[in-house]
Image (cartoon, rainbow, N blue to C red; front, side, top):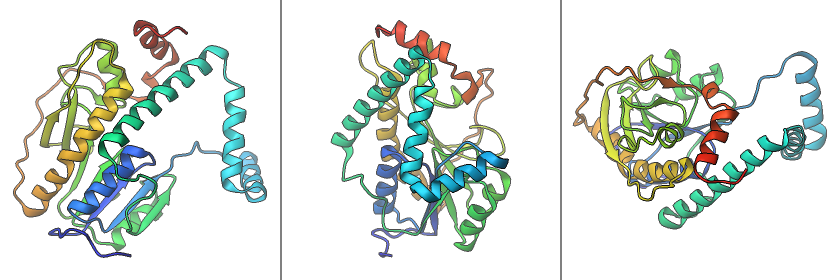
Length: 281
């Protein structure tokens, strides 16, 4: 492993998921503060019994990459026609937004930074917690994983930070940009770096910044990549402040707004949004 390109005041781990914004952030953090390890959560739907055994057997014969590709094709062929059209539209919009993000905020996103990396299906499982514990982190940073549980939260002496894509306490939970566009609420578009506590996006705020919104027909994927660009700017600053003991933590105000879950992102709501934005489906 290479030495840190930057000097920090403690050991820092990043817990994240696959994707272009995640790789760009990992590279930026490693350049600016230095990372001591990286946990990449590649979530898979759980299988049990004969289904799990069959999947393991097929994966060994075909190889993981080919098996996952065939499984994806099988799933897509089973989709109703309208759901398939909505999914393709979303994939196209996400791809276009990420290409703009890469053009503006490269470098090459093909690889993670040169640090120790653990890939895991669940960031809270025992192996992931043990891997992190062995590295004795002073600070853990989170970007795009499932909700952390207490065994992981308790590990670092300086706590755990998360970058959430809204101005908290508004739009807690999953895919904030979707709900902002659906509701036409662009006053709370931005990023909040906050401490993780047992709640969902309820911990003390360390740093906030708004993201630019221009144009009447902005879509959630454009907003998400603008928030990713904001995250690239403010997350290293927040991490440095915590490592040096210079951060200011502000408790969040009480909010009656809902916390959005994955199950709230129904096909009907997605279809409503895209039709409202003028897409012919």
